[in-house]
Image (cartoon, rainbow, N blue to C red; front, side, top):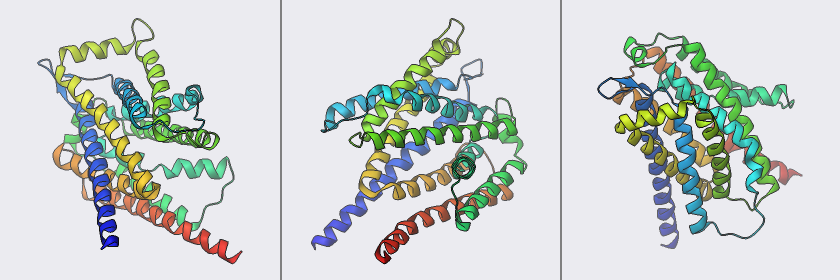
Length: 332
């Protein structure tokens, strides 16, 4: 009975994590697509200043993490000082800005699919810069993902989807997504280095430091000179309160989603979190196609299946890797 109760509790916790991550990030995706494609107000204007979303997201997550640290983050030990995040803050500011700017040129499903191919720049950097050797299975995963994204990009996009874009330009949009992934790689490497140097640093400390610098850099970029685009973004939100509310909800979804990710990693590990977030991306594409009017052709659906087959195979390989390591240790 005790084991049954523990198993049920674990199952409920996992269901809670899945529901939290899926609902927060799927709704955030809907809001992101809405803000980037919708025409607001009587004059039917587009919100052109998408980088403003990153500033708003950083500011909200900064306040959120500060509150979380005050409530639950009073642990012992030396933690990473706030200034140690300055370099990761730069790449974490530039990367997402490129990713969200891509929505002017490609559809939301295309952006989600392109950003799902994170393993490709990681493997390129690993093999070319650090001389890392990958297995045949890992190359197969990357080939499936790269092939799927390429087929999706080359397939004919519906006129309905193209008409919703501000400036349709597939090469530029996919190029921005690729650069987003490259900068994300540098951000993740720097975060890992900080965690290694300061093991007592928890997720809330990391969130606070990253968003502190993100808020600083984005504020300078958006308001650093008299003709900066941030002033126009604020004016647009004043004239179109609906857009302002969408941006606020977008930020809150991001903050809540990060909470669920941290909780999932702490309770079930990073592999479970990767599985949940990967399946969430697939559901986001389906939701965008059905609810937001972005119809996909059979060839595009096939390429989506190809990408997520590669990602699922990668998760399977990660799950097997610790077992292989344990066997090697036993043999030694």
